[in-house]
Length: 194
Ligand code: 5GP
Image (cartoon, rainbow, N blue to C red; front, side, top):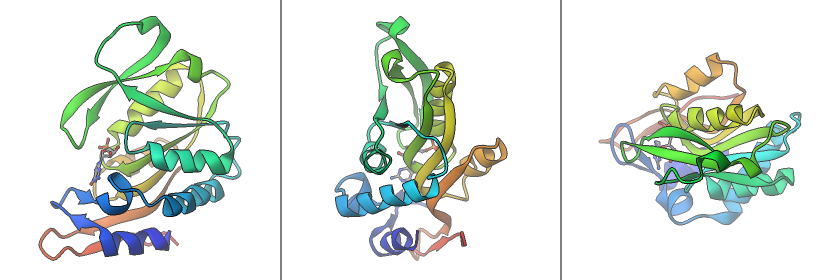
């Protein structure tokens, strides 16, 4: 999605060689009109799939997932980061390593909101090593649901999650794929997806 690449070039900040900040429109302040356009793009990319639910993880996936949900006209469920192991029988739970905080999070979804007849599109803001997505896939599998696809706003192609998930056969579409980024110059190179 060219408009996302342009926006990242204009407003993105290369914090380190591994971390891109897009707080001004995606991760802190949210440009809702732009989110709406990203939601429409996910709908276009996965229109051929029988999606009846969208799954994301709190917090930064929620805004984009909601806009995708609006275009698909399906409910959006977000996996919650939960401290306690109360009511384990009522939830599907998994462990996800947090890229941004470098710690393990216990993440849960109520069994009420994920079912065997769900055809799920997983949405997240960033894809790095793929831990968040693998956790979300695990939750869908525990419910015996079907992962129809994975939609990401920004994939960092130089980290390994995207390649690994594609090799596993998942239909993964990223609106922008950063091939490389330079901390010193701030230069960002995108993968040509045409
Ligand atoms: P992964 O689990 O694929 O290693 O990392 C993905 C998660 O970490 C995303 O949910 C996102 O919140 C966060 N993340 C990973 N890399 C970045 C980054 O460069 N910038 C921002 N803002 N978040 C990131």
